[in-house]
Length: 221
View (cartoon, rainbow, N blue to C red):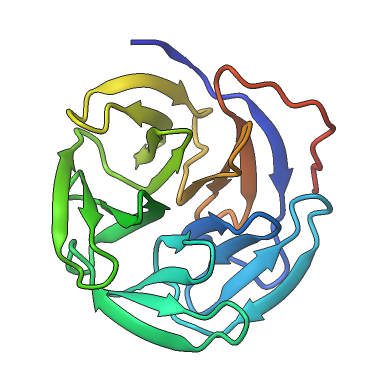
């Protein structure tokens, strides 16, 4: 199983008004950051904060192309990103220990932090369709090009792992530098992962293996 160092190619923040990042999503233009009592947006091209929605945002965030999904305690709320209105909710499978949320294949994928599991969930009913076991805490989930990735963070160690979505076997691993944790993981659909930096209030971008950036990444002190 390939095990390499994560290549951090960009860093944003600490962002104004953001003291922690609980979850990360990307709608193709903006990065959405779950910060506790609000969802903040950031332009990844400039690093500029854009707007915020006052809504409970305690853990993972996902975007299905139209709506945001946001973990709030033991619920997953469906949100209109234009107005911030909560349109509905379903139970979160980790019963309040959920961390990490992604949209793929018409379903939600939910990380269960200390349960060390990832659930595939029906977004309309909350029914669990599949469970994948991990052997590390799950602190972020994302899909890209048919690949399932999840973040781990235990103690001072953190990594990004690609899993076999059928068996849960670890296919490859990217080790983050010591002391740099990941709280929320999202792909930009191309060569980068967006990684929440927990209580640092920072967002970092990590190069996806086999991909190369062809632009300068912003780094904001």
